[in-house]
Length: 239
Figure 1 (spheres, rainbow, N blue to C red):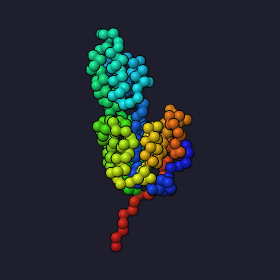
Figure 2 (cartoon, rainbow, N blue to C red):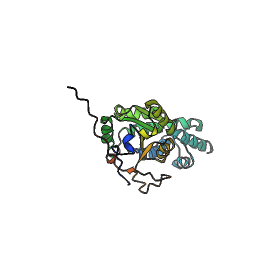
Figure 3 (cartoon, helix red, strand yellow):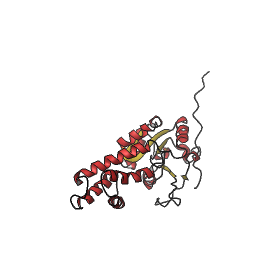
Figure 4 (cartoon, rainbow, N blue to C red):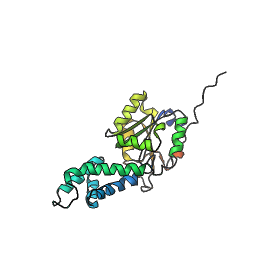
């Protein structure tokens, strides 16, 4: 996996802000989100094959994927769909969001997530979420999992992750040497690289070779408890 990430030693000892991705980093939800595309399509009368084609050819969020699905449905003979193609995209997006919110609210966390959040918060670190999930849905998910208390900010799409990191650094008055990003995707690695922040990757069981990364991260963990952090901050003693 590489060296053990240790926030008590350089270069991570200067870290003041820790920024987490959400899906696949704090909660074990990647499979839920992938499956939800097919489940949402089934609810709206769309063939699974069309959804698979849209996923394979679309770069973007759920709205871009479902716009692609709707466009493909327009090409089918009239009367072969249960819903008018022009109504499909918003219906699919709503169904997808409902499925994800319900299932992600109850799914397991990534190993060690709560322990690490508690440790970092107790030590005085400033914690954030930076996800591609649309921000209004992200806020609801974080709240439903009773995690809002950990974070100074919960930032989502449609803003790019780099933009969110820039906003965090500006608001907190810190530079990239004071920011650690933790995430499971290439977009997290790239955002950290492009902004100059530190990065720790979270391993995915389905990708043991870490082939999703354009460049293999220097630090990779499968259990967030492997990230060694400083002891809790001590309160000043008065006499």
